[in-house]
Amino acid sequence: MQPTMETMNLRMEKARRLRIPALATASAAALAMALGLSACQNVATFTQPSLVRVIDASYIAPAVNVYVEGQLLAGNIGQGSITPYGTLTASNDAVIKITESTGGASLVTANGTLLGGHQHSVFLTDNGAAPTSYTVTVLEDQQVPAAGGHSAFRFLNQAPKVGALDVYMVPSGTTLANTIPIVTALPVGSTAGYISFNAQTVTMVITPTGVITPKYTSTGMSLVGGEVRTVLIVDTQLTSNPPVAVFTANDVN
Image (cartoon, rainbow, N blue to C red):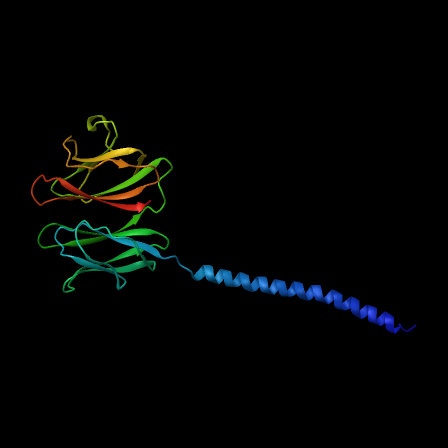
């Protein structure tokens, strides 16, 4: 028995309805795959930049320019300078060049690792003697706030005339004699990095190791928590037993 025209039309309509969802599903699957591949490719090729600053602790260097991978990061800076962070391309072997700001003579060239998504300091020091020898060190800086209710400070001792140092954070209403140092016997050329303590109003006092004779006393610092700081300590003059100068930079907050 031959199917009627009406029966054939119903069959064709049913087949068409079945094909449409199948085609839609296939198209959606293809689109999802394409987007997924695109996202994977983007993630695989994207590298976060590195945040980089300069800390100049050299006694002998003239005013300098600092270049990283040929890009000027800091210009015409001198001892005690801690520059703001600049954004650079991450590199496992970045070329760092220090030149005189006037004349452009090269003082030192070094290589360092700049991690993507991290903060770094290009740290310039010298041997303080003739013949002059400069050193460039790349420090990795803390990039997250200190724990709640705490502050975190890092100390760089570049005070060769004073020598090893003790650092106190004296709470308001307390005396130096009744305070335990947070850093003891920090040698010249060394770093005491990031030491956490209870956030409160404090006075920073720096003394030669084992001697309760301040070489530096700050004004009161009202710390509320979360602060992260780097403290550079240098001699104020190249005579024996001078006081020290302190330069503080905000790493976070």
